Image 1 (cartoon, rainbow, N blue to C red):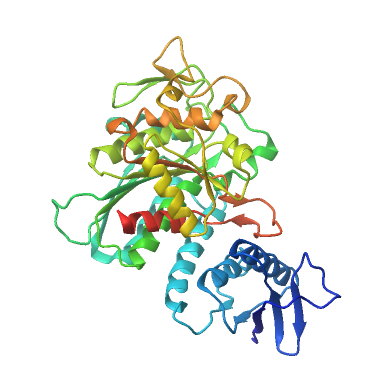
Image 2 (image 1 turned 90 degrees about the horizontal axis):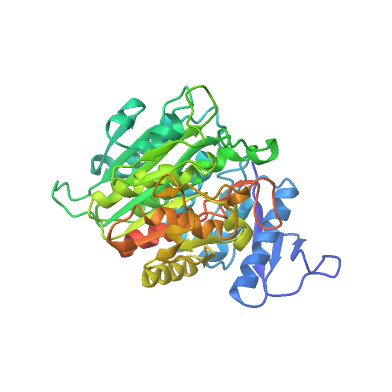
Amino acid sequence: MSHLSVRLSIEKPNSQWSAKAPLSFDGNGAVIHVAGQEQEQLRAIRKAARLLDGMAVERVQLQGQWQLEQQWAFASSYTTPKRINAITWCEDENQAKLEKMYQAMLFTRALINRTPEELSPQKLADEAQQWLQTLGGKAVTATQIIGEQLQEKGWVGIYQVGRGSDRPPVMLELDYNPSGDANAPVAAALVGKGITFDSGGYSIKTSEGMLTMKCDMGGAATVTGGLGLAISQGLNKRVKLFLCCAENLISGHAYKLGDILTYKNGLKVEIVNTDAEGRLVLADGLMAAGETGAPLIIDAATLTGAAVMAVGSEYNALFGLDKALQQQFLSYASEEREPAWPLPLEVWHQEQCPSPYADTANSRPVKGGGAGGASNAAGFLSRFVPNQGQGWVHMDLAAAFNNTATPLMPAGATAQGIRTIAKALLQA
């Protein structure tokens, strides 16, 4: 199958082409016209990639002078769930690095785009474990805590959220230890929300709200993709990964409004919204991460619609009580061209979901959790991290998924965040 040659040019397009779609064709293939600062250039490249996809161009060859970020912008916007591995990179010094980034992106996107019937909680854990083992070999070991074992070991959040499904909930505990020394310190711990389908439970979603909920395991996929990318780039530090995997379904065995969960740290949580389940499973993962003694804990989750309302679908939201770390993560995101924005989090956000029956509720009993819902959710999570939140950053993945294509990105998962996480691990 032939490839369409795609080149860059700083010249303006021919008059018959709209300035909003900086793309033209000549006898040698397609030309993307770029101008202005880097951000403007990358957006123009993304728009052109979407246009070429819309024209059913099946394979492309990038030719001429492209920077790494220009090639990456084109590839991430041109690649769709139906078209993968259809790009030939420029033959330059960036080729090997781009291929590693691309394979991590493909894994992350494919996992998120899987149907909820295909991807049970245990299947999610299995696939994450298997992919990381192909990259890390003997340096990767893992255990899975499944079903009733979760309750026996005190991981009540994952167990309670997932017990309504016939397919049991799972916590994956994965250890990447390249030194092989069982006493090696853990440099970082990753925690991912792995809700493979979210009906909302008894606080049931609308059909429209439920349609995209195969993406609610986007946090688990993103931290896995970030770790895999870091491993492929030479990560030589010990990192532990915790995936909190469950289906949030309705049945005679499902958890209910008014239930009170008692966590391993003694905290009692009243359930006022079964659709605020992500924070309940992440609480277990964050406590497990804290037990490792890691000085850096990163969690990622498609946690709140409030984050999307605040920052839109092109940014991820970042939270931290450790303001220096939050700023460091913002700089990593900027360096990796993965837009992110800080949202408020203070210790007093822990008190924003009060309960007359327990230490806290899991939300506020109003639609969307009420004003400041994303910050209140982060405040809930902060109750479960060590050291008063120092060394912890929370990523609310507002940019994880598009149900329909946009002028810049295809429909489906984006994998935005994996580069930022990989950068943080390599710098830890």
